[in-house]
Image (cartoon, rainbow, N blue to C red; front, side, top):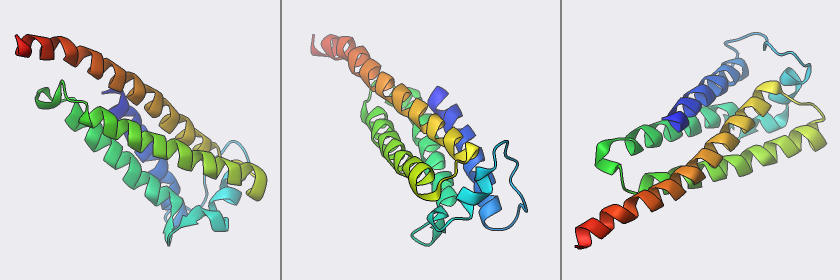
Length: 147
């Protein structure tokens, strides 16, 4: 459930940035000056869509997988934990690339983008822990079924 909650927070951050990018919000609230520079750069669009919109889709998908994975039906299955680890690992790599662009190409940092990168990194760490725990917790059940 912690992963689902973090994914929801990430979706809100990404939605805020998307609304700015598409012109619904006139100015970003940002304690540092780099947010608008980053979000108005040519790197703020990926495959024809705002990067933040991709973030909304990513976090929503993470939320759905995390919520489904907490149901009793899938309590001992690793598939959802594996999916969360793979998805969040991809998110960490993408966020790392975006952070590189901020630091070395755009020369500006967006606190909302950093917040998103931190959120996806925490989700990744939690998903790895969950994957390990589900692997261990399923073993006694499998032993009982084998007897």
